[in-house]
Length: 480
Image 1 (cartoon, rainbow, N blue to C red):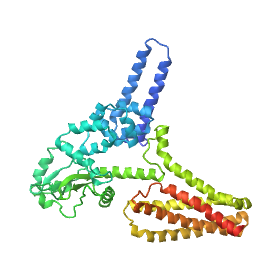
Image 2: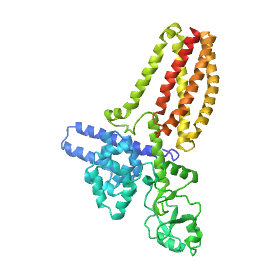
Image 3: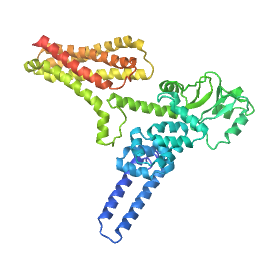
Image 4: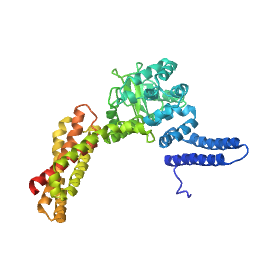
């Protein structure tokens, strides 16, 4: 392989392939040894097994925790558990935080209470709060008792906030300094740390009661005269901070808008109680994006791709049941016009086009609306204006593309009236799709429900039934 062809050392796909190759090679060689009739067969088999196991363990030791988590998610259950047993125990806690909820459950099921306790005790309070819901209550109780007073209070605090709040995302590992000390004192203080907390780009300036007074960026600290006091160079105006009760979505938007790396979290009296980092925000955004994709497809929760058949069935059945009902409704709509279809067979070939284009248009609209809601760009008062705009878009698309389909229908079946019906049906169904695409997510938001859940399923059901009814109804009225 040439230098240009070499893969990046952090290419997780390459790491996955290497682990899969080691697993496959181990299985092949052990099968061959097992089939051979030789002296000391069991000893040879054990030595071969240990050799491949050592190679695999060496590979795992070189990988980042996040890469191991990715590999575990991509392996079938039997291989996943085998690799998991080879991971060093001191890394278990961090890796459990990195894997998806569904895969985490499969790993925790195989761990003894002592192993779970050791993994949990290796984590900070904010990380432990993320893992706690998946751990057995007796393990959490043991871990809670093993914490010092400060750790217990931090864990209790972190677990008291809803999942979608800043309080659930914040961590307690931060650096604070006083405003009445010199920068030289601050530098000496920082040198006492073995490591600064991850994503430390600024220090939080506080008074004796931990009230937030301002921020001191590391850049300012390094380039300013060490004899100056913190109060002289700190920034006290336009400091962006959050409270634990703030919505995580709002915080994520602020991080994106102002290019933040970290920000203080303060209580009602402006005391600094934690901080929010870009790593926490990125993880939250990724989880929310994955949840939205799944909910749009009608999946109730994240699913382990190698989960058992029964677990997958339980996760998918709800919206499939709804789909069954809506499909039955659509079939009954077609049944109402059986006589019309028998008299004009062309209707059977053209009606899926009307329904399909309507469903696609509706999904485009609802995707834009859900995104705008998630970004905080849409209020309920804007519903009428958005509906008017989307109806205008649908009307133009209906006339243009419906007209084109009408011309094609005229050419194929030599019927001007059939082409006109095709154009009219397409336009009306696109108007229906636009209305549904705006109203469904916004009404769900008004009712306090997630506007993204099942959106595509509902839109498709409505445009299928509506499209069939409109097209076949117009054809019955004007063609027969």
